[in-house]
Amino acid sequence: MSARAFSLHGAAALLALCAATAQAGTLQITVTDRQGQPLPDAVVVVEPAGGARGQAPVPVQTTIAQHKMQFVPAVTVVPVGSRVRFTNQDGWDHHVRGLPAGTAGLTTAPGKGFELRLAGLVEGRPPSSTEVMMAQAGPLQLGCHMHSSMRGFVYVADTPWVVKTDAQGVATLSDVPEGAAKVRVWHPDQVVEGSPVPVQVQAVSAVTLPTQVVPRRRRL
Amino acid sequence: MKHLVTATALTLLAMASGHAIAQTLATPQPSAASAYPVAPAPDLFDALGRQAGIRTLMDDFALRLKADARIGQQFQDTNLTQLASQLTDQVCQLAGGPCVYKGPDMKEAHANMDVTRAHFNALVEVLQQSLDARGVPFHRQNQLLALLAPMHRDVVNTR
Image 1 (tube, helix red, strand yellow):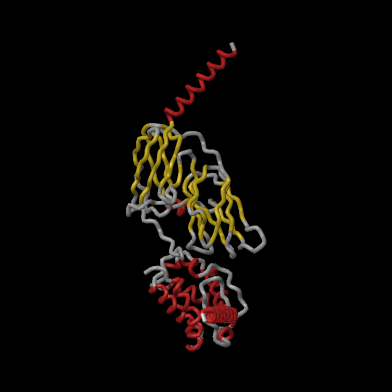
Image 2 (spheres, rainbow over the protein chains, first blue to last red):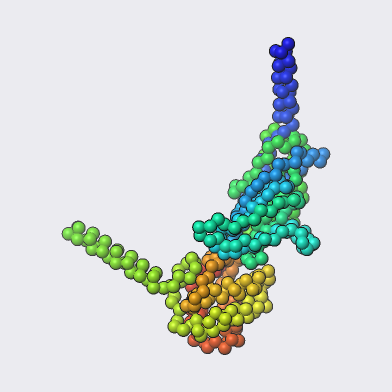
């Protein structure tokens, strides 16, 4: 009796596993810039056909440092509801301002977004830092009121299928529903967002997405 | 013979490095930037009106920068008060004053901007306008510019 129950359970588990592997595919996306070179720090958003949104991603805790007049990392992707800790590693004061990126930032009502000031690092003491909860989905631009040349970005994702490209311009997403989907690419230096590209997600699939982005160079 | 040559070489090396250390100690060390091996002219700090005079100069300079047809665009989003305060600390220290500049070095500070030689030269001209407006004598202007000139190699990063 108990042996029979066990085998039934086993069969059900196996079936569930098969179903899962049959539905979920892995998608590797290579994003290139206007020159055809790999484009790092591009945010890739996969939207399966039929409007599937997947399970809400689990919020995380992460850190964005201000170091040598840069936000590090320059682009951060976090699930909605995540807590981001801003930490000043420079020996002078910084300020952090977060507003919706792009033209959306121009029409943001006063009082929206966030602003904070972080004192400079003093040797022998922990760096000053403040945590901010990312409550709203979408791209957010970070700036510093004191150093206007500083830029950083947080992309707040409300689906599990958002990822940024690495130094080689490659991003990999697993557990994407197989079948038709559209891929959007967002980059801090884009002039306008390109139209979504239709892709066919299979068990293992790879696509290359060319963009018109000319990435801004840091001159050091 | 061979030993003698080696010993002489070692002595020379030691002397050379000792000399280098003495030089480093003799010159003031403004920020962690590239070496600025220029000592300020005597009394330059006083001639510029000390800290308060330099601040007035830099407040005027920042306003002129933003209004300049050639490089005003570069300062469109700049916090002018912050800029003037940073420039004051830096110039005060370079001129032999008691200030300590705590900001980024000039390479880091300009890394996110594309600064050409034309930008740099335009900025120097605007600074000269501010110095003229404040009635700083020509030879004092030159003494200040001599302290700033070595920054050229760190600031200009675009052809």
